[in-house]
Image 1: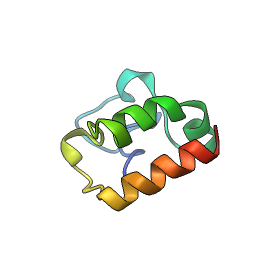
Image 2: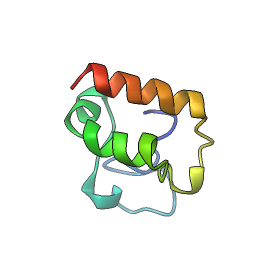
Image 3: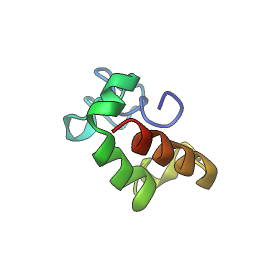
Image 4: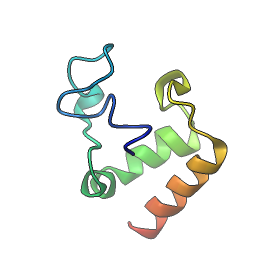
Length: 74
């Protein structure tokens, strides 16, 4: 999540496109990921809509790993 999510989904995004986390979704730690796992699973793993335009270069393997982690920690 640090590599692919927090540049946008943080209280203070470091991605210059955003002034606040899109959709109010913060993903700054594993607890946030546990809380919002279903949304992340849908957008980052299933539809692959996130990261937006795949700006961070998330690989297919990373998506599989993320999905597996979310499934395990539901």
